[in-house]
Image (cartoon, rainbow, N blue to C red; front, side, top):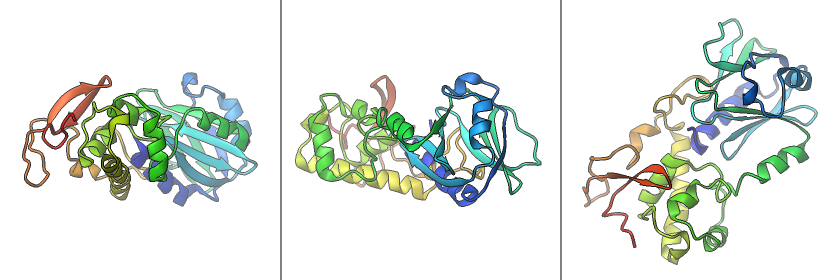
Length: 277
């Protein structure tokens, strides 16, 4: 699933290209479950003729703001991609929303698994209520003292806590493993058990791992591409995720990376660098 770095990369790419552009047509919504609070007719009525004024990210959601406080919110889930193409190109298979712009370009939401979601909000208040009910603070913005407060309130294991979107918004399985390796923390440690020094390491690792992945335009394995259809390069820099049986790259270690199941998710770690206590 695209996580914070991939969604941030997409939002930045879209912001460069569609802000200031007017919607001329909306189509291809062929799977109604992908739009839980709207129909194709409602989407067209709310957006056609309006101009994109902003594209931002909150957690794993891309938020496109149009004139008149209309917001199109897109969640890519497991396999969704938001790709800009010229409007004369044929619509590719598995495209479940198209937004044609006044400059001859088209934004396509392509999702083979149909898990992606499309939301429409008329007004900032309803948008904020939707996001606030689902998402915790932004990982790249959280202060150290606020991370302390969140950790003190949790009794779960670190991996489970990091995956909880109400704890921090946007971290998924891949980046949770990378963050825990970087901070030398075992995924099954109780979140509330960390010492001040361990919390410092965790706070730093969250920022460093996510910021580096954004710089590399995200991690591309099977499905993810950015708004221009290009892959990211962060997969070439992963330290533990997907590397079972390979040696830990930390200087002086070399212990083989192992895969375990934690929080019902595949979890990769170095048992030497990340001791259980």
